[in-house]
Amino acid sequence: MITPRLPRTRGLSRCLAAVAVVIAVWVTTLGAGRVNMYARPGALPALSVSTLAARYKVNRRAIGQALKTARRIQDFAMAGSLSHLLAPGRQFLSFDARGTGRGVEVLGDLAHARRVAILVPGADTTLTTFDVRGHRPYATPGGGARALLDQARRIEPGTDLAVIAWLGYSPPKVTSAGVITDFRADTGAARLRRFVADVHRLNPSARTTLVCHSYGSVVCGEAVRGLPVSDVVAFGSPGMSTSSAAGLGTRARVWAARGANDWMRLVPHVRMFGLGFGTDPVSPQFGARVFAAGAAEHSDYLRPGSVSLRNLALIALGRGSQVALA
Image: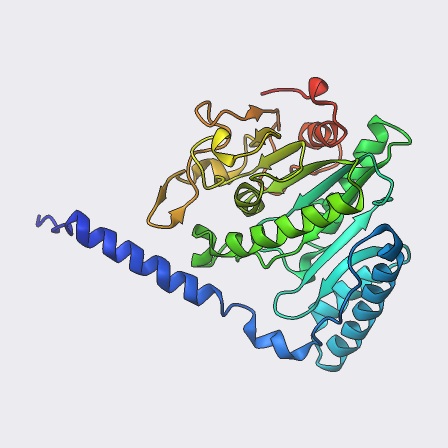
């Protein structure tokens, strides 16, 4: 048997670095084929208490126009999704149908909420999966946000929690090479930082929690430094691009969880040459508060009736002492 000769360390380093660059360039082209099929979003008034209603109205109109385009070009998946977004009472702070699509939905009274939870979704999330993903509506930004708010209201009837489903970036596909780099996370983190700052100016007395699933936890990890948030939660996380909770540079409480049946437990938690996301957030050396997630699979953390959903709602409500730890 002939043993293959392994490349030298320096050669391997250069090879991996080159691969990372190629991946970064390649992921920028994902979804580009649809960029020009939908209209560029119009200008929105700056976010404030007085402009909330106007922004909701402008974005509802934009969703309606995008629905007409989707039907005209026979983009049936998008048309179905947009029809859901136009259901009565839904409120969108921003909307963009181009590429894989972006949308930010508000559930509750954002202007007067005492607490705000911002749900940041992970890989494979697009505008066409904002509400529908097989038989797991809670595994979507819209459905997950509703499940979180419903659970919070069961725990604390009359709560003034507002929940935001934040698809404010374009996550990579699970089957793409981009899912092992932080290229998309860098862009998402910059947008998330601006959004959290805007929400804080709108309602400076509210305490904000970042609720970050899967690749969304990479986005949160890169965004949270210095942000005015009280808690950041990483669940089903591949890592947060740092070796410890202290490395996040935040005074917020840092929480983490992983279900017993989440395939993420099999992912190597390393970071090398721009690939991977570092220490496992549920490991003791990371230093997060690890809470119970039961037997959750990767898309089950917001499933109604689950221990993980209850714990997430308790954190969003500021009831950290009642959270069941792992």
